[in-house]
Length: 608
Figure (cartoon, rainbow, N blue to C red):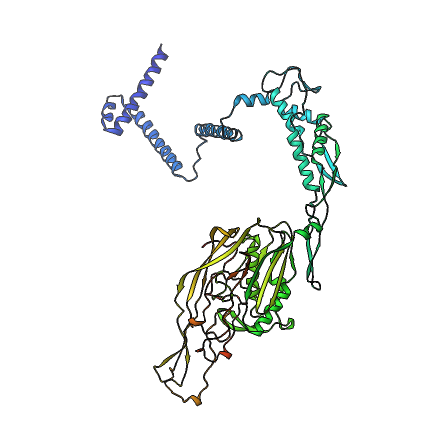
């Protein structure tokens, strides 16, 4: 009991001290309450309190220093946050997995039933052609069956081999879909029925590999000495017997001989047209003629180009190039210098005038029945031509521009070209393409006149300052629309816009004196040549702007209906007012249009 009382007394004393410290720290009243205690007890308490107070202060200071120290110990991991992050990650993985399954099903929601069925193993006794698939998933069963039926079927012909597409695999898949979609039976047979279309497709692939198309008899070359085309080219073809091959493939499938090597059979095929028959069928299917001028150099160039072009054979699908057929026009070949357009100016050029040959050819090709679809490249001149209705010209130069077309018919065509008596003629020789009585034609109409360019000036010191004299009036530009016209038995049955063409005008030339010095005529030499570019195809001495020498527009006279055409000739006499006509340059059209020239027209020609 005494010991218990002593313990209670010590706890009471300790509690009193605690309250005293708390009061003293707050209002100071705690010190008054302690004064009632015995002196010994009070002295001990104050000493002990002072020691503990100092020790507590030092501990608080040390703790504060540790908290403020940059080297204080780091906190431990926050397991609550880690757990939350883990849960979020698991949810994300599950969402991605579901999305992939959804996409693999073609955009439909995942079918858990189908998935489970696909992976389900068959536990009952099930056999396919004696092959046990019990305890297997669908994929395992597929591999087991295909292992027993390895595929290596081939078709051979003349030492070459074709590997037949595995047609059994599809039948295996179809059978397993049936087995794994419900309650399976105990035994199944792999059927090869219903593969007729697939076998025919395989036979067709073999035919495409080995068939050789028979070659029709047609013109093959040109005998220049005889002036006639040579007929040849008749060749037999070869065709695989597709019907028999398809039956052989089906038989091997029915017998489940998936490793069979089948030999294809075939026979020669005769051409549709023999060389003898072709000779009877070939005839001139179009002719076009343009008239030239009296310029000898220019006509020489036209004749040489016509001779180079004559006898050209264009085979089916082949593209003809005028520059390739005629070759480069050089002095060594006899070509002479004649006026030609170069960057919109008239210059003397070897081979000037050859554009009349390419233009005549273009019109003959179009009217042959090949039509505008066959024209692969055509370009108009910078200025209006005169030997052809504007809009129907085809300029050429070495190496560009070129005139090109493709033979879109099933037989070869021949080109006959000739020059005589100021007439350039091109004929297309072949088996008729158009129906009997059908003809094609081109018709061009002027739809707008354009103002001439700004005038150019020449110095003439014989004139008084301020006086201007017109040397040439220049010419207007123009816009043309060309129509493709179809005739049947001489009557027009359709007219459709084919293309538009814009031609530049020539600038007027004016003489004046801006030097301020007037000279007597004998003290200066005046140019007597017309420097203004001359419209292509005009006769010697023609001055642009002189309406009396203009050629009326039109498609010209036609012989034997559309398809055989003769264009009108340019005037053979120069206007009386032309200055020094013998020195005026004669134009041609071989050079390409320069900057600011005509709008190039490239076939197929469509409206702008």
